[in-house]
Image (cartoon, rainbow, N blue to C red; front, side, top):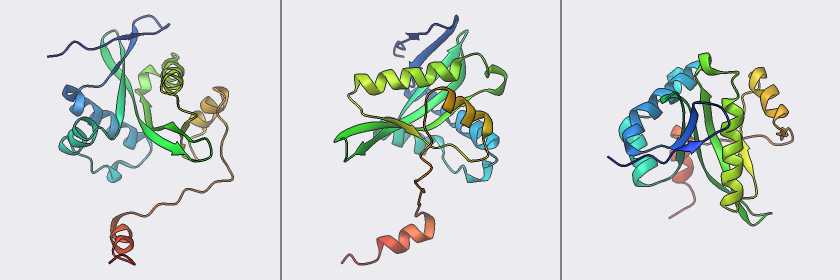
Length: 172
């Protein structure tokens, strides 16, 4: 077992660390809890095996675990995107989740602050994420942290059967 690198924070008894392979089941638990909060539980098809491959073998994304008194209470999953206009990568925050009983203690602010610091250290030009339109508490929180909504942009997605159809067109 490897020694986990601990990142101290200003909040007493709250520490951050990068997730390790042994955290796969914990990461999946956090994903399912987030999906339940977002009323999207039926959309979670991720498995421990898929997460293990994506996060630790292919290293597609990274995860930060927040622990309060040595107990995991939150996580952030992120990966790089790229801005052609800036000519630099950015960090895209896919998920940030704090257990409901731990909210309001500043842990979300600490997680975002850490990701901002990481973005600067890794020479990224941006830290970005999406937020569901109905999630007023999060929208207020993000705006208070200095985030600006990109209202002029619309997210488009191709998935499932439509992804397969698109992949089979036009290419020999």
